[in-house]
Length: 322
Ligand code: SAM
Ligand code: SF4
Figure 1: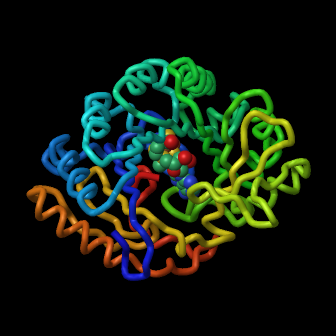
Figure 2: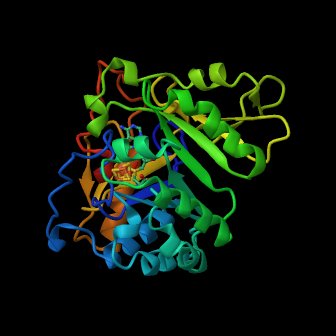
């Protein structure tokens, strides 16, 4: 359905758990988060009801995220059930990839269409630093497992951080030469642990084009080619592509087509607002009404967002579902 400003809302991101097996510095606190009681969190049945209610209102694309979705017990079954819902045209998952060697094949068989894998560095020591507890090899094995399982259009999400990985831009872009990967650089957002970064951490995605001048825009006639929220580029002759996602230096509220559902059942009409409406414990028809109202309450635009003006999201990204 359309919101008040004429935007067609057809995409719902669902955080299926707040928990994670990593502790990325821009996302989660070092000590992790306190595990909440089962009663507070959405059951699988409630999540499926919410998807059915959303589909009745025109949602067509679902992204399962977290926290780390692959640490959730029953994740494969949940994905299978979501994929089987009439009207779900695309089911995607965003993961840190470390558990894909275990789950990629099963997820593919369960009907997951696409995977996005988050990877901010190709250097072992830096991976250990930014994730606090992760091993680079696990994430790299996850990418291979996704290919072996037959996923195509695999996307690598790389949060660009000044002074941390801006000297690796070219290395990431080179990954697209021989493989049909899409590397997507995302500007760091002042949200969750991202608020602890100093100004130098927040660099514009324009830095990617400065570092790799050979990147060519994929749009025709001087127009940007936009895929979701990414503006697309590629190296000439490369099998893969490069996307720039600029939540800070560009704002894409005008084209926003999504709502979010948190693991504790809160609908978030806008990532950068603390407005939330609970669907936990509601019947499917009540959920439909709540989702309709949530869509109609989407703000036209977020407030200013930069290093000095943090997001009003009111939660860490692991809890919202990035
Ligand atoms: N655990 C999964 C993962 O890492 O892909 C899914 C959840 S994670 C919250 C989803 C995405 O949000 C990741 O790509 C992560 O890099 C991104 N993210 C988290 N905090 C962020 C921040 N402050 N700024 C920009 N992106 C952020
Ligand atoms: Fe976990 Fe993803 Fe957050 Fe990293 S970005 S701590 S992998 S939820």
